[in-house]
Image 1 (spheres, rainbow, N blue to C red):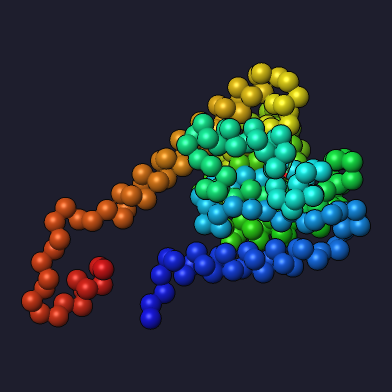
Image 2 (image 1 turned 180 degrees about the vertical axis):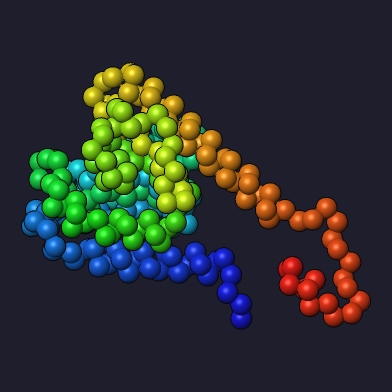
Length: 225
Ligand code: URA
């Protein structure tokens, strides 16, 4: 029996499930005391796009899924505008448990939760990581620079791309300029994904004609396939 790409996908999914199970009973920081559910993350374990928010809000805490409230609806719209839906991507947060009253996550909580996010990114191995808002952008780009200055470009990131953009909640608070900037960033994301998908097609294309089978055993030629 040979090992193929499908096995790889199943392995990733299985390892993510093991990690999610571990997170589900995590008590490593004080958010554990007030959460209803751990919101580990959701989506395609084989996604080429991973979106990282800040932390679960009230709806997410109740349902155990990321971005199910109004911010999530806007995120779905932005994804639809670039021809994708949430099942095509993977969505996670910097902290997996709701900070009470939706306060900002504290540095110690972010630091304690970081290994879960890191492992999610290692396992999913996306082409593009999109960070929504200050917390995920500053964490993954390891900077104190704020999102307004950071956004507007794609950053090379560990052999991948990171595209920081505003958090959908900022657009919902009312500024049309924020939403316009997010649309611009999502178009940038689409461009990178389209380019990589095209390049992958190039490298997996069949040769213009199928080479003749060698008459005799030719180990060098067999190595090519
Ligand atoms: N805001 C976030 O940052 N994450 C969620 O999952 C929901 C709202």
